[in-house]
Image (cartoon, rainbow, N blue to C red; front, side, top):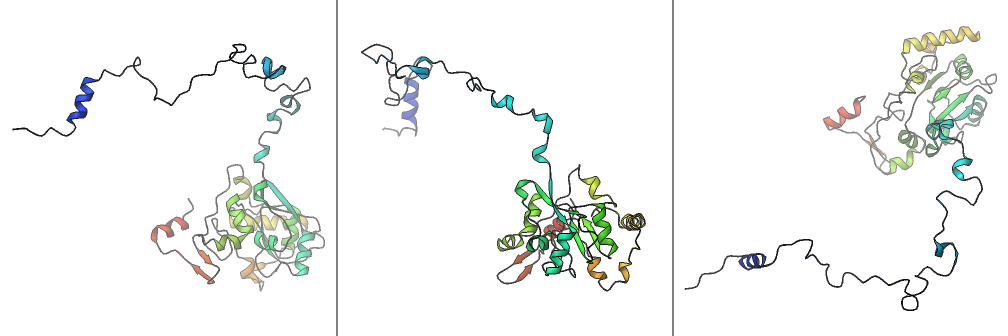
Length: 298
């Protein structure tokens, strides 16, 4: 009576009979390698060894890396990196003069009855912002302060003292805010972002080197204490010799008092909302985790 063999028994017998694998009996797979071509054997293997006739390439007399034939090489022509250290990360701000801003308002491109931010300024062709070229926004300068007569609520990234005084003298409000490159790209081109159907992200907080500027009441920073900002407004009015208007009694007080949240990108649109351009609807999150994430400052 014959009994069936165990499965795998044949493979086990082969392994038991074969010699142990060592470096001495390892061989490449047949056909996987080719013999090296014989070179430098005269007429039998090529008398040039595959390097051609004469010259630098045949003799192997290539110069060292970085040699440029005797002229001053590139690594000596340029200045040392420490001289302009950090120049590739240095933020840039496109200047916007009060004269240019008044011109845009007079043409009707900028509506002074609504809060003005980068979206309105870019759409009005007042400035050109390129985040890929280290542009971080707009700097408001005081050129044309003597002819500026508009009452506006404007948000910029930097502002000179003269420009702040010229706007507040007319009863306006200036706020300096920081935008990270992603938020800045969304702010200057909102329509392409809305058509992608993505939720509005949270705006990032400024870096450690920018925190002192945006927490300063003299700079009208968006992270500054509102009471200190009011004191700074009075101090600037005394310095420049004008009477500070009381915006709480102005008919446009609701517009002048509007300010964005620290994490908000657009006026009237909160982080986490989805703007449906085709159906003209705004979708708001309802999940508790999403609401907690978009409402937190972390």
